[in-house]
Image (cartoon, rainbow, N blue to C red; front, side, top):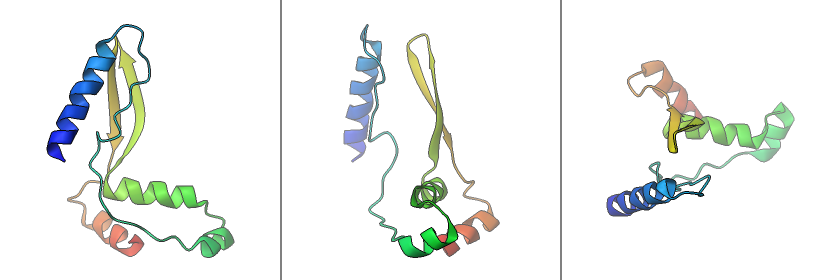
Length: 98
C-alpha cells in the first residue's frame, strides 16, 4: 500500500503541474482502515443527529478530516484537522464512540 500511495502522489503531482487541469484529487492520500462502524440509524433519528455527522466525528477521531484546501500558484495544499493522539481525554472519548 505504501508503494501505491507513493505512485498516486507522483501521478497527482504531475497532473497538478499540467496546465489546464483543475481539482486533482488523490483518494489514497490519507491512510485508510478496514474498520466498519455500525450506526443505529433509528436512535440517531430519534436524537436528531444526522448520520453524516456521526461519520464525520468518527473519521475525525480516527484519521482526521481535510477541513480546507489552499490553492496557490498552482500548488494544492490540504489542511487536516485531527485529534491529538497524546490527549488522554480524547482517546477515552473515542473509545466510548467506537
